[in-house]
Image 1 (tube, rainbow, N blue to C red):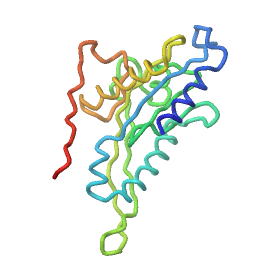
Image 2: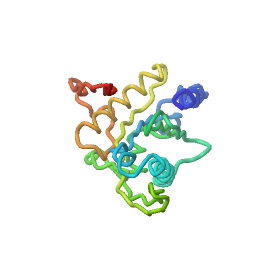
Image 3: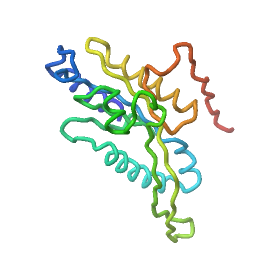
Length: 193
């Protein structure tokens, strides 16, 4: 999934018209990586079928909330419950303002949250409707022409990690991450013998 997202991103980056520098005439690209908070708990509590159904509903909600333009914007699964979004024609600040209603003074309040209701197949064969809250964390950055695309994605990922490790449920501009901040080391789960 990530490879296809990169191909799409590379296509958008390779489009002509990137030399202009004012927001009114520059083909801006804002790159955002998002991750569904606590998604493992959904799978663990309700099962993977419910998790898959919830994931589809969450994607629909995100696309609707952000009013993605099919012919302009990119929304692609990056891996697991992470997604790559590319917004053409607007800076990261403009995306935060227009899609989230967030100005410079309150960037930390950029949120994607909802209640998802889905039907779950129980072990006894019956079906049960369940509802659970869903929040999303993310990082966003402006793509800079001439900079390696993966470097920009890595900066957006750093914003995502910062959001996840400092409270979740928010979108963080990559420029908001303190330069000396280091993400906690992830412990690899060892399989039981």
